Length: 357
Image (cartoon, rainbow, N blue to C red; front, side, top):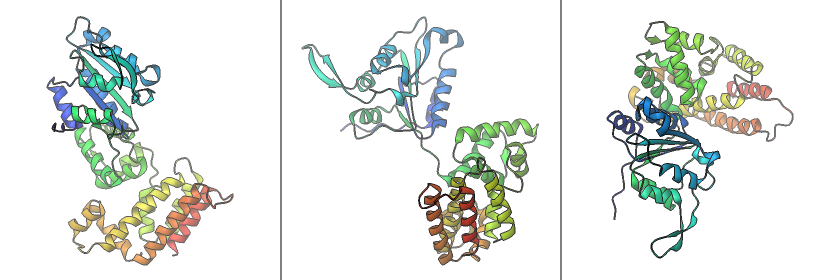
């Protein structure tokens, strides 16, 4: 049995490109577009010299081509250069990419059903570097094309980060920009921007410009330069709920209700669910030592004191009721059993039930 090829990682691709080690095919797939775009740009900017790009670097879009055109372009020879670079963007829009086609093959001119891309991957053009950007979805690895890509070692899968991984990713990205970010500031960015890595990286780069030489990103910097209200944001709402500060929590939720585009109900519910599910984990952890329980909860030890305090207010029984409320209002936010009630009113109802359960 053939040995399964090692999967590609961003770090491996990046280091090999810098060392001028290239694979003939890079099939970049997955739900997270950030790394797919980053790798495609890295190849576009570094493989060919500027003088070679005009005739030997092409970008095609999936909606404009089919598999026959893709393979035809890939088999083209470079002009006055060692190789050509062919980047296929939005490849998920190529309608026949995963389909088989009846073609005549072999010396006996026998007709067979083959996948054109799969056949190319088995015997790629050595002078072509083919980059296929297959965004927001993945190939079925049980089918022949998926199996061939896995076996070849040409497959890169870009997965969405989990919520608890975001602050760490933000800290790592900031460090790569020569910056240090305070834990609360990283948390606030993660809660406000979600797991859109492209948007997060753009905002951090803007922050770097606005810091004007400073190297630490504070909560105040995030509030001032990303446009998050100092007093009315998810971080302050979570703090108010954790302390059962009824007045402040209602002030914030009223602000959210009056500005639904910046603070959609689905975003509020997701934040509530994250907070209360972590509290359930805290209650259920047999070992309450700082580093063990924070690891179980998926948070930095820095934030543990907030959960310790909230756990004295919200017992396990209350948390189960709250999780039930969240499920109920999640369905209502999607139009089920909500009648004509506006999402802003549903938001206020949900907060009332949480604070008075």
